[in-house]
Length: 353
Image (cartoon, rainbow, N blue to C red; front, side, top):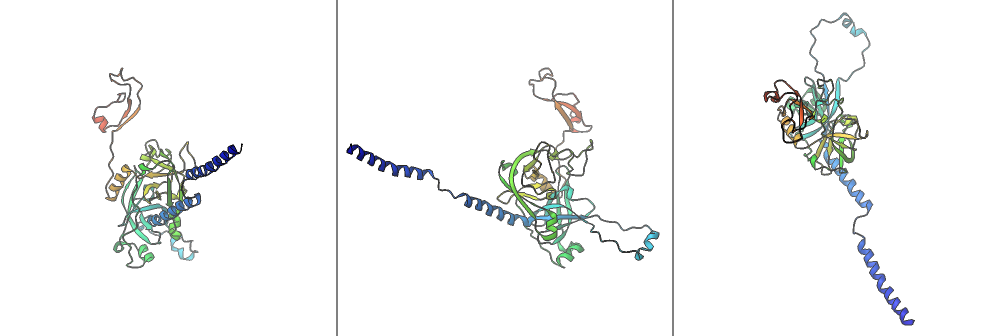
């Protein structure tokens, strides 16, 4: 009995160190949750600090032609009336992102208007006169060029001081939105009103929640209604938009959506809601190869060229073998636009492709 007890004690004393060693080996050598959260926080803070300098406010003023009409009788007594309250004719139209150190700003098509005078306000609260380099209603994008000091407007000289011109503007490098995955952290930076008033853009962070979202047909992204009277006239009404919960509200249009490397992966839009999806979501134009080609053309002041077939389709109702084809896959031509490549090729409504 005594020998059995001694053997049991020896076995227990041998097992306990081995069990403790095994338990220690199973605990990974990883930072605790607080350290991991602090590291993510530092990354987000650093990215915002590096990229917010490149987010600007865009404003425009309607250009008024001098009147040649004789003054009305009421105008002759205008000096006798109490002066009306001053009205600021300048309208803040959106945010933008500096994409070239020479002063090229990427923004929304809706933020600019041909014939108006445009201005760009940076986070250091300097205001620069700007001209439209190029604008493309199909992509909903536009590029503004900030004017150098010799051609600056009176507003720029009054705001910044005579002869004061800051070139080599800070830019945000382009990223690749096609590399994003659901759940990846992104940061939104915008709010042109805050930039104009106190030089402090608003920032928000969240995750990518979906891809290829369609803007609703009634959402105006280019002031260009189609034949049906709706605004389904951009690429984004076909399903291009990034969906994210890093939302800044309706004032975010033209703001930057960046990844944790500080790369521009999207241009935030004013799309408030996509049918069938979460209302709190935000939507951004993705920076991918297609958008990069469009942006490159706009930076050069060129019109963006698009491929055109000139035909609309509907699902094929006639099996391919009946139509003389070797496959059941295909579509039926619904409409052929006169003068289009499809019309010149001889396509007609009812053809199966």
